Image (cartoon, rainbow, N blue to C red):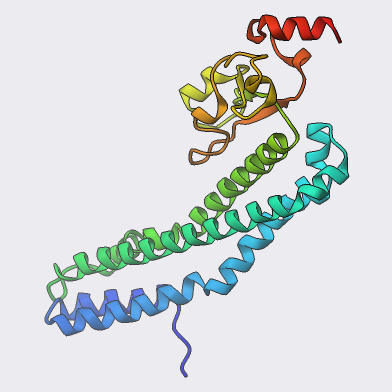
Length: 268
């Protein structure tokens, strides 16, 4: 079976051919679209290679958080507690890996089809010998822009999904170890980052956890709100906000404590 030519080679041949003969038949266009689609699929790589790359990236973060002890240190809990929770955390890793693969596959398909659409739109407007050779390079750059952006988009997806994985691992650890609230941190000093206005406004605010024992027993109020009622850390695309989970009543601001809680603290 002959090797598929590189995408840029096929695109160059297609552009030269259409420049020479123009759009003289539907068959000519269909032939080049087929060749370009085949080359584009070869360019983006196999599904197996994509899945392996994503697994490596997310598993590296998972190891740092779980087996490397970062979660235990963040939450101030013993390492064996994290070990007992590992089946739940592993399910989150698998879920996030599959979500990443699906999203990147979708982006690949979209980029390939958009590239072919650009090429078809250009090709159907061609008459024989309609442009000088020096115009071909910027033309090919423009036609292939969607597919050339795929490596950048893949990196963005992996970074975003890693942030989501870390946020969810922290949330699962906190809720399974009786956290009662969380303080929002919006990375306000992060440079070259497009902060969401509403997330910056949450910086430093404390949100009660709906299923936390303190809220359930009427020891604390909602504070700035219930965490589960807002878009949480990493939920929105490319959100880098994170939280500090709180476990004890003496970590909660006085204006969030009820009289019942104040009485309980006096007796401890």
